[in-house]
Length: 259
Ligand code: ZN
Ligand code: FE
Image (cartoon, rainbow, N blue to C red; front, side, top):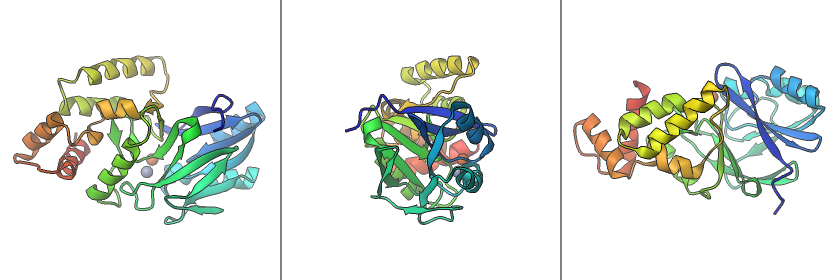
């Protein structure tokens, strides 16, 4: 295993609430989901970095908008889901693929739900997960293309990664997700503590990310559909029994959409 201390992972904020994650090793870099090329090019220039790789999780504009011009400007190889239309893609990926990025192995996971071809990148040696719009801090992506069954399975796959895996999501949605999570589990001490910690970070203008799989297991309602408190809240909302984790997920996902 490569030591992880010589790879740094830093956010490049873009649009209202996107993070384009930049991985840096020495003078080389890779970027995940560059929805905009300009702030990435600016950071590369400032730091005198050469961009080797672009990793794309899914086809939405705020994740691919800068891909073509970035790859043209830098020659970086574009990796993305084979099942979706990704601009300038060089390497088509699917679950089970393994790629080398800056000398580090990244495993590709299929995580359909938000979109049908959505993939996530897991680097075990970095204890890092880049999950696009599938898993958010205290939340999950909307079901634009997939089903609740697909999303529940995708989230379960991510939840089964090592607990100390750092979760690099693509949006700063944490505080609004935590408000909803507290509506689902109002008695959760862990949620209250997390809300205070994240609110303090935002007051200082800092990202609330990465989180960890352990934190998500403890506080993310969409990973907690089998917990009695979450099921009870969903049943109260639905006005009837919800026998499966998937039916609980369906109710809280719809509840969140109108929260
Ligand atoms: Zn998206
Ligand atoms: Fe997005």
